[in-house]
Amino acid sequence: ARWTVEGGWGQDEVVPYGPLELSPASAVLHYGQEIFEGLKAFRHADGSVWTFRPEANAERMQRSARRLALPELPAEDFLTSLKAVVAADEPWVPEATSEESLYLRPFMFASEEFLGVRAAHEVDYYVIASPAGPYFPRGVQPLVVWITDEYARAGAGGTGAAKCGGNYASSLLGKREAAENGADEVLFLDSETHTSIDELSGMNVVAITKGGRLLTPSLTGSILEGVTRLSILRLAEDRGLEVLEQKLVMSEVQQQLESGEITEMFACGTAAVINPIGEFRSKEGSWTVGDGGSGEVTLALRKELTDIQYGRIPDRHGWLTRLV
Ligand code: PMP
Image (cartoon, rainbow, N blue to C red; front, side, top):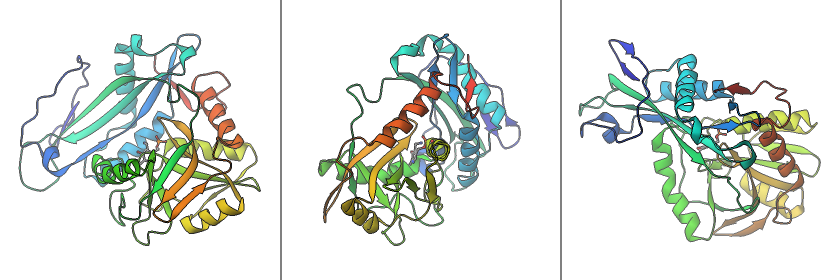
């Protein structure tokens, strides 16, 4: 659908996948006025297709839109667009038995043709879909995480809490640095003091202590509020874990890993759901998490969340919405 400052949102349309036609002067190409979301469509055993907490993604997209001076898409229209795409792409939704899904990528960008710097008066919204294989085809594999002391993905007053393309552009060099140091992912520290944990390039971070507490960085304004994070916090509370959203100073976390006070850590996000962290590395050294494998609580939370998503256990929190 297209939005204009005069007419608001226009009609939705389902069209075959293919290239877009854009003016070389489209504002998005120069100033990065763009936001997106990521969700999955899951096939259940009876053939029906569901998605997980789309209202949370719709709301987050509205928050991102406000921060990037883009128009807010009403939550009903967000859901309608997901339903239309999944109805058209239904044969691409993998079988219930496969642990695969159809990844959905709604995105919005400034398509107006002009070179001045201001919020665009013409904006396009699209949803594309792509089958997503099982994230761990050979079983869950713990991540090696590189702590970058050079780069930050977000600064105070910046766009860190929005899901906008520019944040990912600024994280790429950190990811490359991680790969050069043999790590799978990069951990960004807060950009002001470079001491506390923000998040990975595409996942939030959680720690579990010996005493059954679950710790995760509070939403400081430079962290993306993950829908998976939110859901895990709830499932952890349901299990009687004490959930604490607080500042996590990396040097203290390193001490707690060494003393055995923190027993498990994981990263969470829509793509991997939950990915155990096996080791942190930095220029100063390396820290193994637990025994470097996949922790018990981590795997139990992962199983519970995926069981809800695939309809294998009751959806007690009403998190699923039927698409087809
Ligand atoms: N942080 C960042 C930077 C991300 O890109 C994502 C993925 N959307 C997340 C956290 C996790 O968010 P969610 O659980 O909603 O996928």
